[in-house]
Image: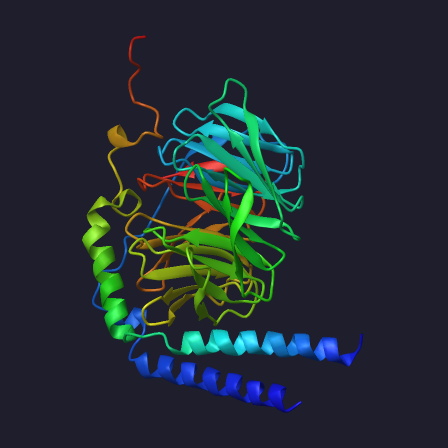
Length: 338
Length: 72
C-alpha cells in the first residue's frame, strides 16, 4: 500500500529530525556542567522507625501533605494509615481485592485510593465515622499500577492497559484518557504546577502529558527495559526515571533529552521505586537487591545506601517537608530514615 | 471481513504515530548546558533547606525519640 510506505517514510524522517535536533542541543551533560559543584556529603541515614503491621509484601506507600500520616498497601489485603512520628497505626482499610499495586493520599487528607489487579481504582473517605468506599473507578481493561489525586474531585490513574486516565470523582467517570504508550503504564508523577504529568511504561519510554488537553507533548527514550518509577524534579523542569535496566536517568524537559544516567557496573538489579530529597540533590532509588541507593543527582555518583530490608524495596517516599525518607518492602516492613 | 479492515486499522495506527511525531518534532529545545545550569542552581539555592542533605539536630527531628521524658 502506497500510503503505508509513505507514512513509514515520514515517520523515519521525523525520528531522524528529532534525534538531530536533540544532538544539536547536546552541548554538554549534567555531570560535566556540575563539575565545579562541591560533592554532596556522604549521606548516612539511620532507621528511626520500623513500622510493623502488614502481614505480606508491601507494594506501595504515599505520604500525606501533613508530613506525618502516610498510607501503605500490602497484598495482605489492607491499606494501613500510619502516624509516622509515633509509629502507630491510625486506620486500617480492608480491601475487596488483595492484589493491590498502588495507593495514594489526597492532598486534603480526606481521601485515600488504591488499586491493582482488579483493574479498578477505589477511593475511600477517611473522615466519615466509619471509613467508607466513596467510588469505584471502573473502566481500565488492565491492572492499576499507579494513582495520584489532584484534589478531592479529580484523580489520575496509570494502567497495564497502556493508558492513563483523569477521572471526575463526583461522577466516577473518565474525563480524559491519555493514549500513546504501547506498553503497560507502570508509574506516574504530577508536575509541581499540576498542569501536566509524566508516565513511565513497559515500552521503556517516559511521556509528558498535558492534563487538560490530553496530548502527549514529549517522549523520552533511552531506557532499555520497563520504567517502573518516575518523579518530577522539584523545579518542574526535569524528570527522573528508574528502570528494570538497573539504571535511573534524568531527562530535562526543556532540552527534551537525557542529561545524566545513574548506574554502576556492580548494580545489576532493577529499580523499583524512587523519591527525591527536597532540593532535588539526592535521589533515593529502591532496587530488587533489597537496598535503596542514594545518588547525587547532579554528579551521578552514589553517595550512600539504605540497607536493612530483607527483601525487595518496592516503594520509597519523601514527605513534602523533606524531613525523612520512607522505604517499603516485600519483607512487610516500612522503615523511616533520616 | 478481510484484509481491508486490518489494513485500514494499521493505516490509522500509522497515521496516529506520524501525527504524534510531527507534534514532538516541533518542540522548542534549549541547550543542555543551559538546562543543566538551571538544575544545578536550583539544587544549590535550595540546599540549605534540604534536611536530608544538611542533616538536622536531634531536637528538631520528629522521628527521633526525645532525650528526656516529659512529665505527663
